[in-house]
Length: 206
Image 1 (cartoon, rainbow, N blue to C red):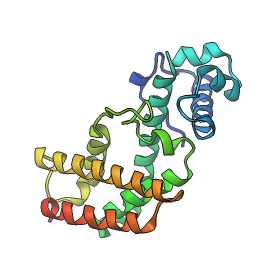
Image 2 (image 1 turned 90 degrees about the horizontal axis):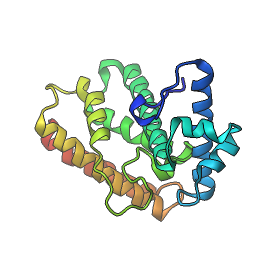
Image 3 (image 1 turned 90 degrees about the vertical axis):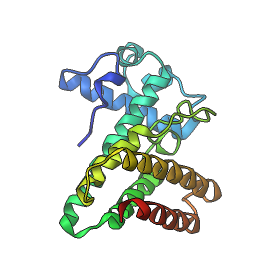
């Protein structure tokens, strides 16, 4: 299933199927070009050419390339959430929070390795890419808190939200380190990250 970014990230939300399909082509082209030329060289004109749509179609949805990249990041988060939800539902009630954490990390790594454009924009907290003052991962942490809520004995409160945010920021930094050390992610660093996250969250979740 191809998800459409939340309407707030768009100038105009697609109403008809043809419009939604055009938006999908634009975001797919944006993702491919991010891998090929990077964020700095990305342009709305190049995206329109790759997607096979008039430049006006791009500007109908996005005012600039940052808005386009942010919409791609929102789509990434939706697809990630769908993949995680499917795996957690398949596990039923058998998976505890540690197994759920493995699912969260494994699906993130899988997208990091295979999803076009994901290695640069992932969930969008560092758009534009390389910005020194990246936004905190609040929307990611809140989404993961909701995904994990079924594995916890309590509803997410302020302490849990803070713990999830710290865990997400920690995972973000260590996964980026793993992929700087090795193109597909250094397995030893990823293993260290997994153990660190388990030890930290155990203080709050056990």
